[in-house]
Image 1 (cartoon, one colour):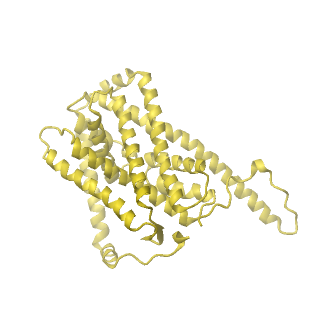
Image 2 (cartoon, rainbow, N blue to C red):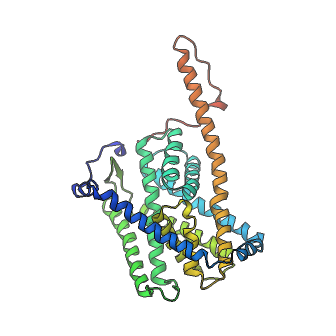
Image 3 (cartoon, helix red, strand yellow):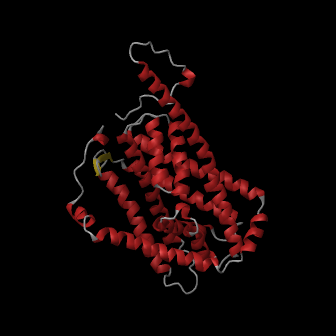
Amino acid sequence: MADDLSSPPPDAWYRGITRRRWWPWFKHGISLAFFCVVAWLVVSQARTIAWGSVWTSLQAMPWQLLAAGCGIAVLTHLAYSCFDLIGRHCARHTLPAPLVLLVAFVSYAFTLNVGTLVGGVAFRWRLYDHFGLNPGAITHVTLLSMVTNWIGYSLLAGGVLLAWPPELPPGWPLDGGHLRILGSAALAIAAAYVLFCALRRGRQLDVGSRRILMPGWRTAVLQEGLSALHWALMASIIYLLLGRQVAYTAVLATLLVAAVAGVLAHVPAGLGVTEAVFVALLGHQVDKGQLLAALLAYRAVYYLGPLAIASVAAGVIEFHRRRDAAEEAQVAAAGPARPVPPQDPARAPAKAAWHSQ
């Protein structure tokens, strides 16, 4: 398959910059500066909060709201898991769809809580490899999942900032005009991706040491629509847990800002960052105690609950993987002279020879 071909080295200008001695210092300096800004924001906002009211608001939250939030969280995780089905279609592998959804769910739950490298990359590789997918197809699916997530983000963020720019707190240097410029740029990125896919349909794109087959424009539109739905459902959980005291578009815009802040700050699960952004942007519209109570409930139903389920699923898969490896080692140690007993179908490894074409 085309995914297994080697690609030419990166552009010379990029290699020249990244090999400079000052480049690592510059990159880490930017990250440190942003982290300091976020830390200052978290600390400054934390000082203004009456934490007793947070606990009181959390205790007063109706269980019906939590149940509804859990239901929407299930739909949101399902929407994200479907990103890997798009990758399955584009990579042309034949792993069963339910298995693809399981791998995507487990990897996403860990991505939310411990970061992209562990969840989005490491868990995907380990699980897909266990189920027999080759490295080229795994790379293809992983990259397309990440692209799907952020290209849909660009589409939704652009539309929100253009049509419903959030009401910023008094004294902020930005206004609606600045936000609309950012929205136009985000929409341009989303439109450019669809156009790029239309022009390069069926062609290969060099990504590192792999060549990825580009999807067609219809698949690109599906990517953006499914990802936008995923982000919109995430915001609806917080909107519901807030008792609909704030406009949904304001909650959605704040969540989109918080997502980028969490990524740039390199904080696992955006812990503290998400809360600081919400308090900064919405603290003048709703009681801060109620706001933080809603965010804590949101973390419980969208982060911690799925993580608990994913941990059990990952543990079961890892148990089978180790058992299969032990059985294969015993067969190899027995040597060709000894007959190999037939394997119990109930104990057969949960994988088959599914490879990319």
